[in-house]
Image (cartoon, rainbow, N blue to C red):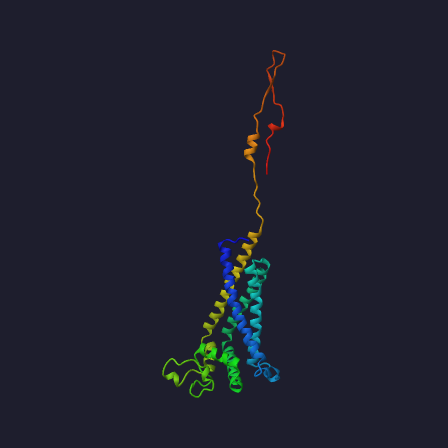
Length: 277
């Protein structure tokens, strides 16, 4: 079905958004499953004392978040690519819930920034200890991403004596060859000292989700309008006028001299205009 410019714009925006969303979802789900079923970390999930640890909770959140993102993307991609209004309506509902949750989590993270920062620092310490003990490649990738994103190095911050120095970023200056920031302190400081910035990131993500929601609703409306049958009423004014014949008057005279002539109009089908719808 044909869409106008606004409908096509929203369609392509949704396709790009869903591709990015799918890549992030696959990354979260893949990393979570790797950490959950890896030979070096699988045993942690079977120990009752570690069931509430930051590592177990973090891996569970990664798996759940990745699965939810892929589930939402499934409806979004199908609805946008095939222009299915029902799938877009389901996608819009799921996206509205997800966007609201992201904003709420951002506000709660700002309110409880101290606790959140300590939890994430504990999660990093768990990953660090597991890698030092087992040298798991999946944990190495995770540590490399954290170190390069936050520009920190291990739990000590001394690249020379750090056990995971090959996952640390390149030093920016001479002094960083000797001492860099420790990641545990940086992670806690990001949530504690930069809580408004973290809240802004969550709220900004929520705004992007709401923009995608608006595009989804707009595309759904455009698809509904384009699929509505259009009726054209044709009139045959020209034919009616062509078939119209002037009325012929018939004069009947009376035999009485005191009466005036009477005019009669004979009825015929040609004298009655036809209406066409």
